[in-house]
Image 1 (cartoon, rainbow, N blue to C red):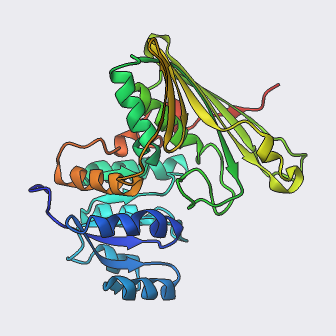
Image 2 (tube, helix red, strand yellow):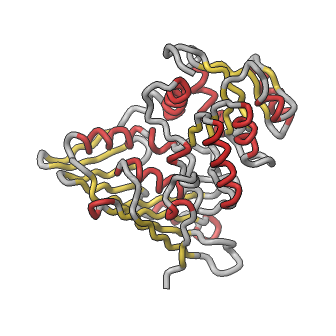
Image 3 (tube, rainbow, N blue to C red):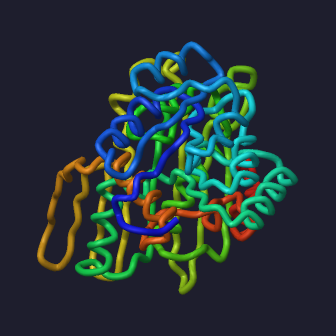
Length: 338
């Protein structure tokens, strides 16, 4: 699709929930000159009916019906449903662009099959790497290009509280336990690639279990060490905070955030909107505006991607599980520290 900026993209929404309510519904409403919601589908039919009444669109009974509608230009996959990533296959068969907010967690055979479908169909595919569009990330990129110079070292620490995947600013938590390798692991890895503007030459991973055996079913701490060309390094970690056994200890823990050491200065980021940076002129602290919202930026760049306009939207080629991603990002094997 090509044409003017104001060509309206007619979309079908698959999966309604908190991410839809908090991020995409308000964003699409503000971008009504570029988007119109034509139909919605959810595994809970009544939820779709209520949403359709509010939006003045159609609630459909099945995925195939939604994807094959002639009045739908693009498909949004927003909430985990019983059918997993199947809408991607349907959209490829229908030749329709895909906005995917779900982690690309599937076995290697399935991911290779999707890779073939997406490439052979030629459809636009945008994974929701929301951290790329946080105000702190955008401001950091500006500073690296002007004041601070090329990044050389990234050190980051994230923390999850419970399982609320669709809380803002997202998408680093879940409504159900999921592997930290996938979420937020893959999103943190993508953020590092985005900051360094390149692929790592090597990735190492470690995992650990903090709670005694039986109280935790999988690793609740992961850390990665990424090496980039020229010796630049990123070390990022994510841990799950357990309110039950640890109570209110979170109020005494260090603030999660990311340090970026560059050739001419250092920045400290607290996602999504606070950045402090130091160079030869001194220390500067900025509280960044959340307008336009992350949702507006994501959808704006998806619109540009579909139209073939200039965009910083991530694509299937940049998805950690895509066929062109380095093997170190496709299937990282973590090991417990000895």
